[in-house]
Image 1 (cartoon, rainbow, N blue to C red):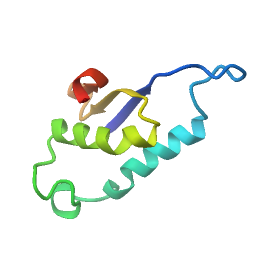
Image 2 (image 1 turned 135 degrees about the vertical axis):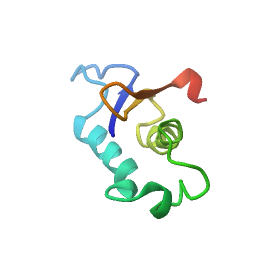
Image 3 (image 1 turned 135 degrees about the horizontal axis):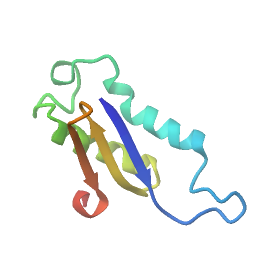
Length: 94
């Protein structure tokens, strides 16, 4: 899987960026940390009660990641293959 996250918001007046890239990277790392090198259905709490389909993974990842990104997540895309992806947007997530 490849996760692609897009945030929105106001640009910082001085730097012209939305956030510090290291903070963005850390949020992604923290949201995914419990899933690294794990069989999602057997070894994670989130997927013991529902299957780890792409649709479920992207929904749960949104719930974990959005608060870490100051509730500024606008789009989350999960690539399963080069031809298969799952996209969630803020309007559809809330």
